[in-house]
Length: 433
Ligand code: URA
Image 1 (cartoon, helix red, strand yellow):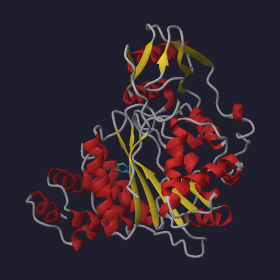
Image 2 (image 1 turned 45 degrees about the vertical axis):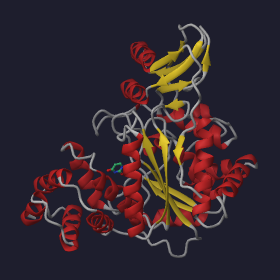
Image 3 (image 1 turned 120 degrees about the vertical axis):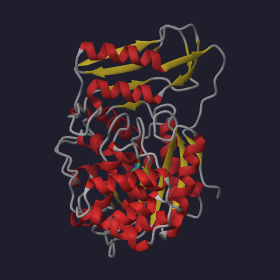
Image 4 (image 1 turned 60 degrees about the horizontal axis):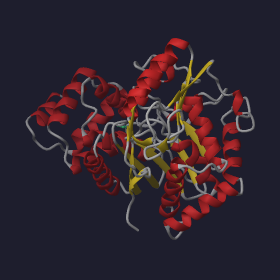
């Protein structure tokens, strides 16, 4: 390992054997954290080339079990978002795609800091299991077309170790390391088609469109090398995605979208569904895919699939018919506009995410407990016209004190303009077809 670290430090190219040794040693615990941490910093300062990134990705995928989906109905798809504030797209997209005939198996993460995690959102559903074994994932996907689990030790264990070390060594932001982390998990998950949603804006770790484009391009190059059929879009994370931020509130919003609610967030989901259905080869174009997704929502198939999914993962209550059985906060406060009439010009996603963490809806440290019931619901988005006294946000909190702190923080997160501000769709860039 010393010579691998020295090679990176001195800017010498890595061989495939070196990166394979590193990933397997990270995965099985035979390389100590201090050596991995030293290599990570060297790799941060001297970024891996595309060839090295691809070798590392494959080696990380091979550090554990790779799901073999043979026997499951094709096409096999997976999705990944680089995360952010209010992003509950997976909860809509999985049943929607499965109801259109795709097989979707997904491993999702927990939230940390302002970035929410799908695992925490689904954990707000009483009884919902998020620890499916590889066999259980496959069996469930065979039966109902979809399955989701939290990070399992079996798949890409090297990523678990390296990501935890990156988190505490200021090396998260390296694009080749992000690419290998994301794509190693996708490779290990066994899908052939992968849809990637790269977020850009204050609520994510790629604050500008240029940063996000650089990551998207690097993901595309490595995915192609690894033989994944991939589509990559860039979407806006300067304002929260959708109206709800907070675990149970986001599940409710996802169910409303599956039930036919139309919004900026529902259009985001439909566009992603169209992209995925086209990429899977079952539909000729994105537009045909979008039409199929809209139909699955309007004829009730997508919602029925969600009901089947929650039941298969052992939800103990039917939250689709009874959303009131999700955790509910005891304090509900409204923030109304004090401004003169005007338009909303900014809702700072980072500040909103931070406010929800402080309400108890997210973690500051890995071991923190989450309050699934708390969060915020926006009644406006960037570009909404507002008049004095109009409700802007509903705050769901555990105590009056926490509610008041959130109200103060959210008032600072929202900016107004006296001139017309155009509304902005969530997707900033999609592949040209
Ligand atoms: N998401 C991941 O899975 N890995 C990263 O490194 C960053 C975002």
